Length: 158
Image 1: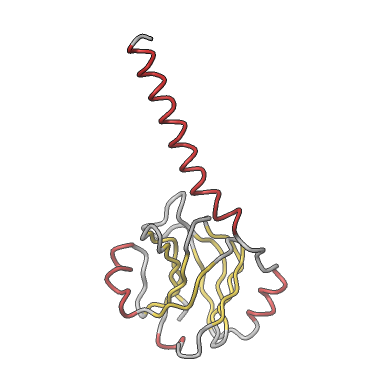
Image 2: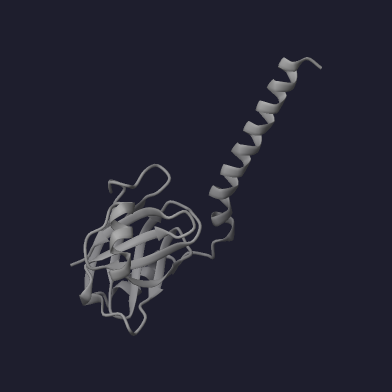
């Protein structure tokens, strides 16, 4: 075989493997995600809310692959979300005492934040607030991807 043909085949195969790997990272969380709570369950859970906020796609570090869009309800017992998140692995929800919309700010404030729990669904979610967390000590909800250290979205709620 000629060197040009071997080079072209190598490049095309590497490109196909790369595309498959990236598609797998994107699709795997969707395939493994549990069923999301329906709008009625989220509406019932949000009745006990004390605060509301909105995830928005226009946060500084949000982009085409890292975003959230919808309404958040924060209560002493539960945090509920009606909307959509970009799919991804290992999302966690944090409460922050200051507004966060970048990876740098998240890393700077992480030690002062409270980890509420893992977000496993991308259309709507419900999370119980641990009893040791006082939601009034914070003003922002942040969704963060632990695996890739990536900011997803945030919302102020008070």
